[in-house]
Length: 238
Ligand SMILES: C[S@@+](CC[C@H](N)C(=O)[O-])C[C@H]1O[C@@H](n2cnc3c(N)ncnc32)[C@H](O)[C@@H]1O
Image 1 (spheres, helix red, strand yellow):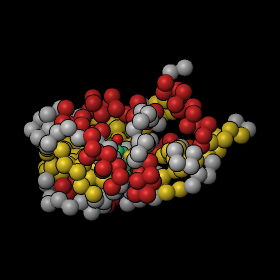
Image 2 (tube, helix red, strand yellow):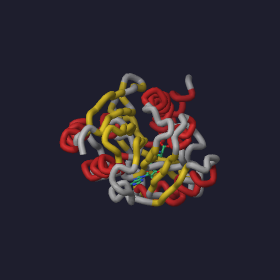
Image 3 (cartoon, rainbow, N blue to C red):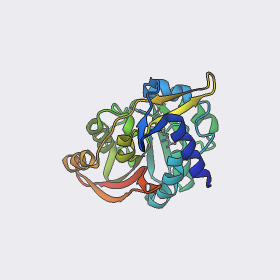
Image 4 (cartoon, rainbow, N blue to C red):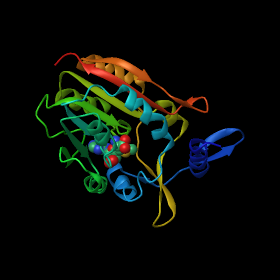
């Protein structure tokens, strides 16, 4: 059994019960994104998640030319994406995140002097318009209830012609009952973090309204079902 299969199997056994052939979600104690990631931060990233195993190679494949460009890493967490952008020659990266504990981890592991970190909310980005050439938002949009507000902020801070690279849980997985959950080593319990299901229809409606053109969409599958998606898009009007 591969590492991915065994990991995914463990997650499923932890958070779901199989009953009469139907997978039923188990109610887990729920945290807000800020509180949940503050608690998860200490152990976050210790083990690569199934989602990241599927998503990371596609991010690498679809990352636009960031050489000498300004990159916003929205929902930066511990800084995985900023590190990727730096490795591809970004001029600067700015990571924004709600969770101060996740940001502490990012600060602690940063080698580059051109990576900056900021506590903030994706719905109220503290930047003037058109500050960035590229926005990368990995595994974060599902935590925002207001997808239209989140995408409007991304559109505003992205320069005309700039690129958005966005990944997240697949809406199918969210509908199926998959949770963003973690084991708290302090009490040995599993907790879930609040998430919202955004259909592609919602994304495309917002893109059309804002002037964002979809260039690529990938939906890698695990056990025959889409678990994650990655899309790349371009700002085509202000
Ligand atoms: C699954 S982690 C992804 C971290 C990183 N992008 C990665 O792919 O490794 C989601 C991150 O989004 C952050 N987040 C959730 N809601 C947010 C919001 N409204 N504004 C900014 N960050 C947010 C969380 O604190 C968390 O660090």
